[in-house]
Image 1 (cartoon, rainbow, N blue to C red):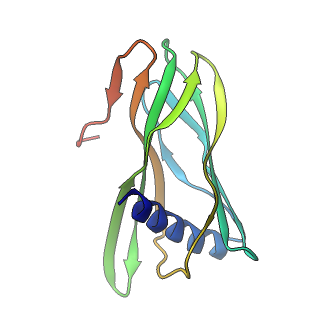
Image 2: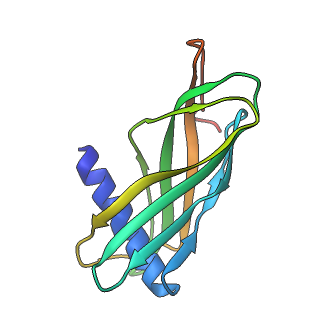
Length: 142
């Protein structure tokens, strides 16, 4: 199931990046203690590979040990309003307070021939686990 989510995520990104000239910076939604500084996506058109980075900063007062991110997209396809969301696997990282880090989320993943293009794309943080064992989780209302 996780592999299918990654394939759907990459396919949507691939179409978007090709349409915008090889690089795309997604809309983002932070967590209270973890700010997304950038979310660049690059595509090698010849190899049809996608790379996704996330640059984050710990703006809280506890060391972060991992976080979970979600890809959300929506748009109009053949006169239908379509939306999707895929929660991705946890990212392990040691990020002390005030530290920043650029992380490779997806590296050189091949994508099939693109079959849709959703125009409104976002990466958001849905949970953060701290080194002391405490955690923050986004509620359904957020």
